[in-house]
Image 1 (cartoon, rainbow, N blue to C red):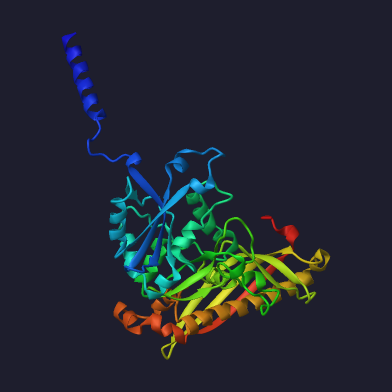
Image 2: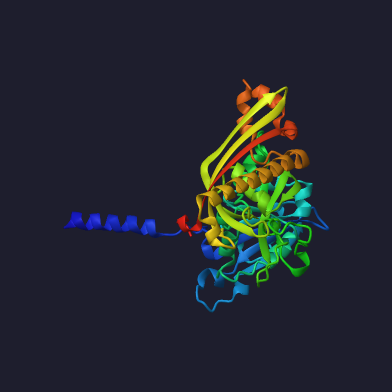
Length: 409
């Protein structure tokens, strides 16, 4: 009995030590969780840092009666760096700033035009920031973007940010660009970065479509231009194009589709084309890959010749007269017209990136690198500068089925 008693006492003693807490441990009640970071140019200092925090009531209350406007709060400060700004905010608020749940990093166009490598490196070095955090370039000030994040179909602002960028999976009007993607492209010698383009949608910012073909209107918008009226005014449409770390241009919805196609990031999307059977009307078709893009790059007298072969399955989503599009002859005609249309759009996109932006955002460089025997030869070729001399040969094949065969609808 004495031995049993001593064993029991020893076990209890061990359990007591394992159950004791650390006197210096930090609990979740001591932290303030950031869901979004905004970066603007400062007026009295280098940087204006804005952090959107989830409020405790929003984190712990899932009831339907919870107010949407109380799910987040914003703190802003002018500072010399991100780390310095966070440190100043830590001295102001009652809890320590924690970035482990940050969903988006919003950077104003004005700041992005000056260069953002310093901020990208700082964020990547921060062990709390997750690499899948999305990078957004805002056409308005970043703080205005955060202030206008008022979800209507989501209970929490954090979930709203996730849903906003995930629309790229079924529209391809933008791309789901994450911090790790931007950082990798910034450090790579064969590709240059892009970011999600976003803005505030108001009646004043809507695009004047007077000079745009009625068949291209819906896909010609950029962020803040779409004539949508809703309680929430934020819009993520298009892409921001960077040369190194500086913003140099923007892509609209259709150009973003071309980017997704060539980058092998397309899930499916819908495009509107002129109806080749009835030219005064349009026809909507869904696209997905039949085969993944086949891309080869050859160097001829130091000039890149880029061959692109694309093949798609297409499904008629809507048309003015369904009976006109049921015959094999009609489907073949629509396929040929869609092939011609996509070839023109992808060609225009490719030359826009090479001649106007001088940026290889698709990453054709990874196909060109096989033309060089050593890493030194590749480095000396200066691909990112030579890309502007590229010549494109594009082949597109579209196989169209009627809507009745479209199993995804």
